[in-house]
Image 1 (cartoon, one colour):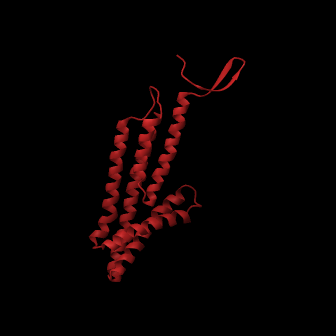
Image 2 (cartoon, helix red, strand yellow):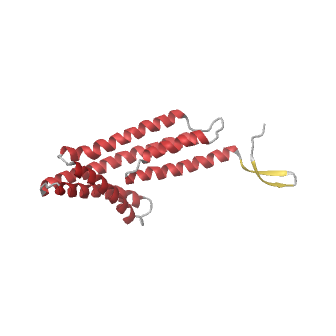
Image 3 (spheres, one colour):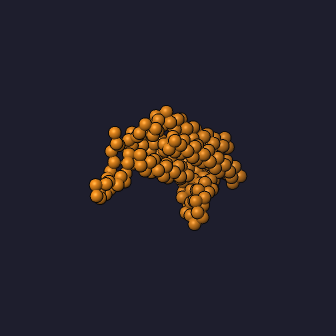
Length: 200
């Protein structure tokens, strides 16, 4: 039985099939890759990018019709959930543990997060002219230095000395740097897993 098609043109009794179900599926598979990459990049700005990847992939499974050898399995979606949790654990442990071990105040930890968010936006903007890698590296570096600045300001705000504030801020910088690299590393694995399962 001939599969349903969207007919673009009829001429002299012949039809030109433009959008077959297979092409329709792969069109949305390409869209999934694109939105997952955007979601992955959003993690650089302290947004829940890995969870966006889970959401978009689950929506793809639910809404896009598939053929016999197409589609993403729910087991893959479950594996993405596990990876997203792993990314959150990596960011949490590496991002706050170092500064907390140095005796960081709550104010310093909070301002470190705010500084990291602002710094990542500024860094990505400054290096925007550099194709592809510029905004990514800018966001990572900017977030790290933003965390440093926020932590230092928070520590001096509560009356701690310069050396003590510096030690806390340095720990916040390295924690944010390692946490971000770990989380986006997990995120790119998630994008690859979803892409491979959708196309192969």
